Length: 253
Image (cartoon, rainbow, N blue to C red; front, side, top):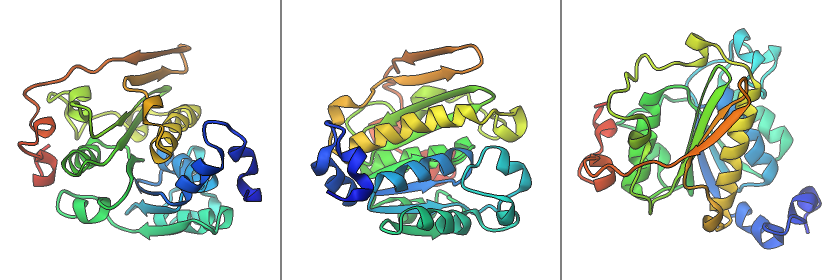
């Protein structure tokens, strides 16, 4: 028993064998901002084997209210590189791969395939649709999360499901004008709630506990003290779910 993980290994559904599976696992995280900094910490502290961190942005002073990995000394520096530095201090056993690049339909498959789970740490639906399409095309679990204000939602999309992110938000979404922290404001506790759910679902997938994965969309409203679980209807017309076409990989959102 590794002393670092002794408390986690005492959790019966995980145990020593589950910890070994985590050590062999790999995750790619797109975005190391509000959602991503929480997720990265959870996974690194849990002991995943390999974590790729993709972000093209730099740390800004306004990020420090909610992006928990960073401090004032990081302002103006690469998020991917700062995240790498801080996470390595937390757990040097994890293989960390910082990538300073913007996810696009053209580079997505080279950046996202070959991992056990794709995780959404972004704040825009263009990137989310790219992740969604790569995940569906290549049979990779995809952990989606979104926040605005005190409201958040999340879903782990599994390869065997006949639904995808497009079935959640619909074709009518204006991806360029969807609310974000920058446009609609945000309180940081909602990030902790949504990412705790995302990280837990990911740990379930990585340790083979697929029967424990929530198949419904989780919705949280911290300000109104409400949360709910919503079933997502299958859409027979969805080109992504049917495998006919992956629009985001062609630049069509």
